[in-house]
Amino acid sequence: MNLTPNAPRRITMTANPDELDLKDRLSLIESMIAEGRRTTESWGWTFVLWGVAYYVAILWAVLGQNVVAWPVTMTAAGVLTGVLGSRRAARRPDTTVGRAMLAIWFGMGVSTFIVMMSLGISGRLELHGAVAIVGAMLGAANATSGIILKWKMQFACAVVWWASAAVSCFISEIQAGILFVVAIFFCQIVFGFYGMVAESRKRKAAGAGQGVSHA
Amino acid sequence: MPDLPELNPVIHGKLRLALLSLLSSVEEAEFTWLRSKTGSTDGNLGAQLLKLEEAGYVAIEKKFVQRKPQTLYRMTDDGRTALTEYVSALRELLGSAI
Image 1: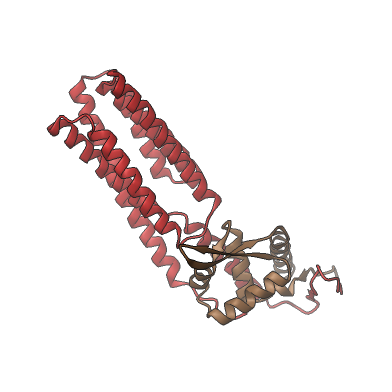
Image 2: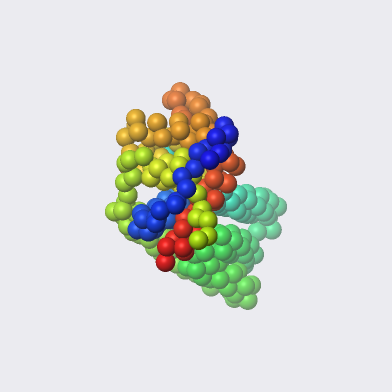
């Protein structure tokens, strides 16, 4: 028996181990690890928020003919995401996957904002290019997230965004605009609500089997 | 008869095992999060976390966030090694029991 300070006393299983108890402990480890990982999967609301923000910006820009519609709406959506996200994050632990997600979407958001703003200020922004750039950026971010999270539905959204980016280069300006609105509906609004429902189901399922109250 | 593996008694307690498993999946976690995930009482949870800390498996960081005290727990490299060894030992024992 080892009694050195850094190596705790160990139980030697000399008798027949209680197989059920051992299996119980193994399943406890698996369920707790899954519970910790599940904590990171709560981003459905951000897709809905940004989908609504895109629609607000489109309506404002088209109906109001206002050049600040997109930058103001996107900045407001970014601030809102940051505030709501940090309030949620305060109740959740930090994870590597969580930081990876933040890095991907933050990088994508800032890159898109800088390019679109520069094109807008220089007067070289037109709808085909805008849909192609935004579609390609959202496709890249969704694909990366989908691969990390092993979420096929999100990868499907990436394919839709990539297809929209490619197709927008070959169609009329009005068609490109309609394509953008349709892609937002499926890849932001529908996917966002789907994500929220899936997350809620997982939470309920996980909540049903919790409770480890003794040592 | 082949030698059966040993199970680390520090980890063998169910709540301590649950805590280490939870901490293995996150970078760091707050006391209240661990309490909500394990359904344990404050006293019991604090006592078990202290045992894990004394064994060197968990590191504690105390700080203030928006003027509120926050206690963060993080699994150490020793804790990760101990949990990995424990799982290997469990699997080996289960294999020998079948």
